[in-house]
Length: 245
Image 1 (cartoon, helix red, strand yellow):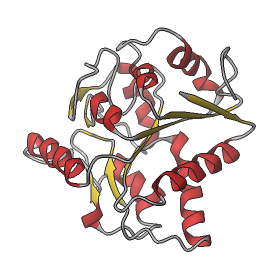
Image 2: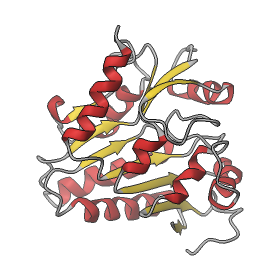
Image 3: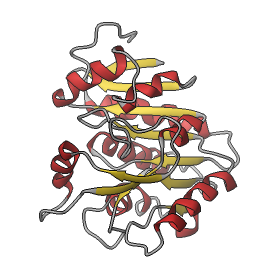
Image 4: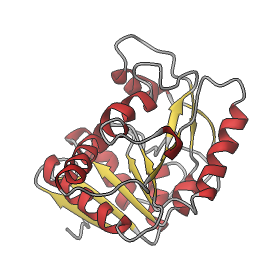
């Protein structure tokens, strides 16, 4: 695990973007796992800026969504896919055939799960998984207590996550269930990038990065990954004791 702490969110996001571009530069058909959330927003902005400024060819990039609320898809304002369309996919003009995303409103959810797992296999696995950190230590919609060996599955959303999740919507929503890649899917990625920003994430960042690795703190399990980088700005890192930044 490498921990990189920056003075501000913008610099943190730019450095993470630079690393990801280096990781996929010489990969024939990179598959990126992308997550919704406040922390990755700046990273996506930097990726878009670099692609445009440096005229980077992204015609071989593929994307898989990390998670989605049950009952929602791209047409629902506030859904995970809705935000990622606005934050990354539409600005990059990514065609639909290079994106795989759970449709939480599908009649056959098991088919959505199988489709996603098959897409990952067809692309040769995830090259880089870009994830954020939940206030209770979740990653994706893998809530505390999730089996570390889990692959894509339906998740029961913790009460705290349901409350925090309301910020993505203009009206109150029922957010009791979700569909998510499992911990095993993330661990199978060749590289994992965790982005954390904001003082409110300080305590949970310290727990998942320095306390005992446990399914009770799903994001702590990522510390077992061989190629794992954590980017934080100084407020999110305020309680860390062992950082190597």
